[in-house]
Length: 170
Image: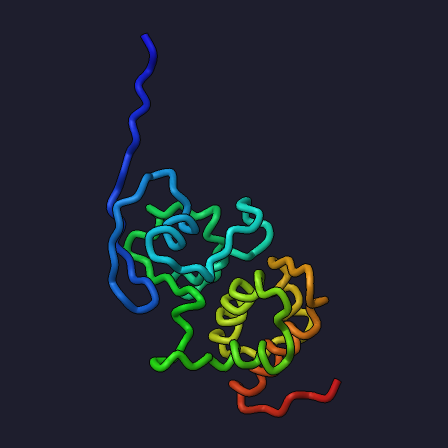
């Protein structure tokens, strides 16, 4: 007798960009799929789908995670932020988003949301990092366009601004 395939679903309650939400999802679904398909969070990109490129990065309780290898059901009770959650009430860019624009740290833009969310985690620590530390913290992201230096400069510029310190000369 052939085995019958039974789909299992679970309702997940969590906070998405400051709003309490719930969804019933297939227990095998990734957080990426739920955020993109059910909530239209298109900043969460599908890149490698194995946790290597960082394009799907989101903040979960303030910590950066690759949402492609994080099950949607694990979001239960969590606070999740995507790039859409960084915009101000009238759609204005956050300081780190503006720094990416100012420093030309964006080319095709595919990797940008993931980089920015990792930068948010770095910046919200309130610490001052060296260039080497910043490079290591940003190393979970692949970018085919920028050469990374402009991205590093945007994060560094925002870090010093938030710390109330002048940006050191190169």
